[in-house]
Image (cartoon, rainbow, N blue to C red; front, side):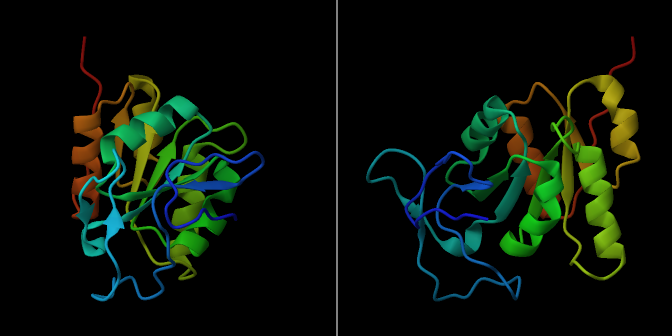
Length: 185
């Protein structure tokens, strides 16, 4: 995995396996020391900084750049988002980043979000990884059936909007599941 400098914003490097927003440190104890420096908000120069204790590490697995932009818009300044492009890289990225939440796009080229969620839950059930919330980003209402059987804690149906995504992320971090159900005709 590659990491970006501490002042990085969404920096997509050719051939990079992971891109990072803001500074990133491995959280081996799942706690944030009170001595850690504030992390700057994404935004215009001089934007206020948030204390690092209020920011969660979120791992986003998607190969869609527009989805990266949507997540960035919804979570900029409130959480640190780490992006990988391949579902097959989820387990390695979870070990490296130690995220507080995993966001999985249902449609990823080589290994979809359902398979990545099932693999993550299997590793957690075997005691090799600590359990963490997983949100699945579904492409259509018909995908909810897959989401129900994926082991994910919650799911959202695209198209996303910043308020729904931010509310789902905050809820998942607080231990609440958000499961959008398709409307009946």
